[in-house]
Length: 436
Image (cartoon, rainbow, N blue to C red; front, side):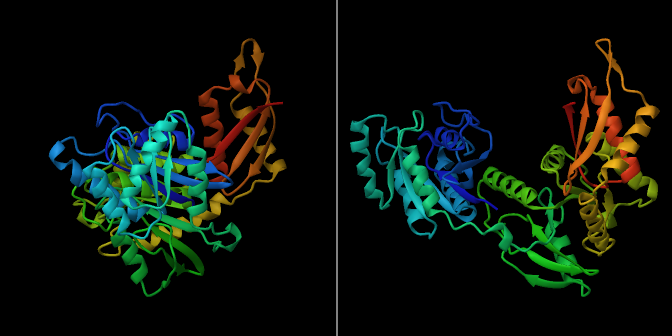
């Protein structure tokens, strides 16, 4: 898992501009008016051989001026919790302010490394003026211009130097990781606790990557897994938006790290846009995916038809994701919670499935006879050859004439028939079509 760098500071010092500079593209919306940047900003940066995540804490403070100080303090505390290194941004045009002093006091009282970034130093005069910020008590001060890029190379050199050492991939335990994700209060922690308290599961604590808890190693039916909990932040939030933002960051980090993502839904609350976003994110990173309807014990009518209605409703909201298995469980009563581990193991095995090339081409030939390829621009489309170029997760490459003319519905047909024949339960399939 890559290290995390947070950008903190009072409004309108150029945090979003610096964020854009560090991730190398214009992602954050930048404007001089305070509060205009309402998007949640986090991205990936690469410098001197190191990858790291960057979080921009600008743009989601409360609009009310009387609570702005409380909002900044809350962001700084959350950034300290979530980050390996903090960039404290100030503005040479306004000089040292009371808010700067307030933030610096918090940062000096914790043990995470802090780099003081004095922004808007566009010329030598501004660079000389930046030295007054040494009064804030930080050793590492960097005069920069986020707009022009002046000084950001030296800043990045120091960022990489201060980041914790990377753990080599081959030294990490090669165990499948299952991440429990979902909205607040759907029962993620309850499910984790229920699984870990099962006396048939052997549990040991291991260092994790989510910073609120230690991930757990669990043995079940002869298989060993690492369970990743994305439960809420420990700190009580005065500013709800900050908590929701960091919860989203934490969820996305866990999705990237996991082999199988288990989306927990509250069976009494239904399925919303945030749940859909999590599923699409898991699919985008080609993770195994399972949906668990928790609190099934509270559903008045627990017939098979009711579960089918739940399934149909969810599949209608996320069309093309009907390969995801949906389970009904109760973390409170323990009902069917072990089914999550059983299905996770099946999904892990499906991700590793490798179809021999001759067998795959025989199958493709069969489905081409079943449904002929269309004619485009007076020329019949032909798939000459197919092969699975990767597994865990599965990637298939098809060689054909005019791949750009292949309609989306025919691609969907091929994927559906692949699933009919070879299963791939809970596993996104990547299909690449290339010119022969």
